[in-house]
Length: 385
View 1 (tube, rainbow, N blue to C red):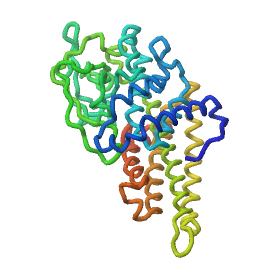
View 2 (view 1 turned 30 degrees about the horizontal axis):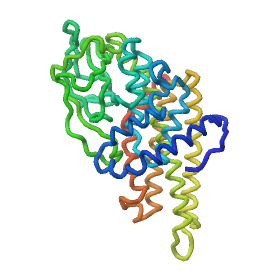
View 3 (view 1 turned 90 degrees about the horizontal axis):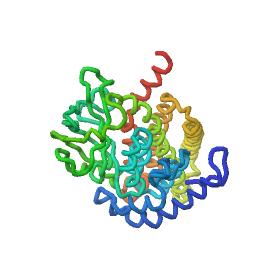
View 4 (view 1 turned 45 degrees about the vertical axis):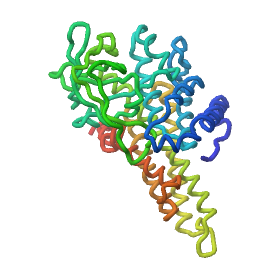
């Protein structure tokens, strides 16, 4: 990945110091083990604890609960960029840090924060969010998992699929229907803890990419969750999700742009080193044009991403702009991976090639967090259409 100058209009020297610390941490604690994690389909729990000790978890959580107390989105963005640079799996950290920990820091009571945030920030607890179901993906209003009040508990019944951190998670933030007659406005959020009776996990799912990120199904069969694990107000889950989704989508866009920058750097390096017909393949006009196009598109994506980061820090990132960032950058990531693999030729198709892994990782980016089609629908509605 091409180096940023130490100070830019969007990132200062303090962010670059943080970047250097993250880079050193990943080179020491993650890179030597990552190939094994890819084969096993899960990262070691020890990595979470080490990340917590390094201050890389719960960066925006209040300091009194062990967090960093830093609302600046640029810090988790730098962490994400360095994960990509180190070629270390990303979704698990995004789900834990930028989704669940942020929801819990914003929506829980002081008592709930004391119970959950210290562990999430230290890495002793790993978090997941469970929204997707067999018949409810991008359309959250179709969720069928139910939560029925029974005295001091809610009884959950249902199934969740494609859950990132599903196997490692100690806390799962579950969206369930508490008022079936109210449609999308009848959802609530609950924290289901490891070991709760009636809560089980399915087998680890084998995926095309992001193989070190554990993913599985979750089952709730008469699962009795204490009423004290309700997050925020009953029936307010949809509103909470809609408020938090722009941050999640910006995190996914951050992954996409960082991956595009890394793939472009790899492609440029390969185009200079690889020779055919007596010259570097980068000297052929077609390849120069391809790389020039890639460079231009990646630069545009970076500019818009940095704009969105500025907006979220100011509390002004709209749902429509987050959707624009998510669909544009992830579709670009897929396109860049295709072009870069084509440039590599047969070498790019080998599993040992870094571009083959990036190609596999890119495809799900246009699906989770809201599909490209849903993002365009949101943007269209924002235009009054």
